[in-house]
Length: 80
Image 1 (cartoon, rainbow, N blue to C red):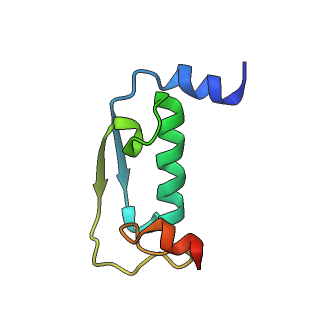
Image 2: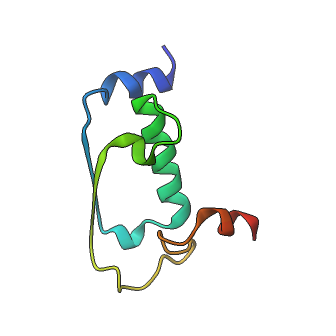
């Protein structure tokens, strides 16, 4: 059994995903979370694997140091 299979089996029933302190999550990390949830839920090109996502915190706090804001296009970041 691969690591991906273990994630799929463990989180197959997942329907809600909450991220607290979202200001600590940069653009690249959010993209990684998005990709991982799509793998777990076995869907392609569906935001956050079609899960309900709750992001909690004050968006007016300081931006992530190593990444861009989560709502800045990841494509523009990767092309820089």
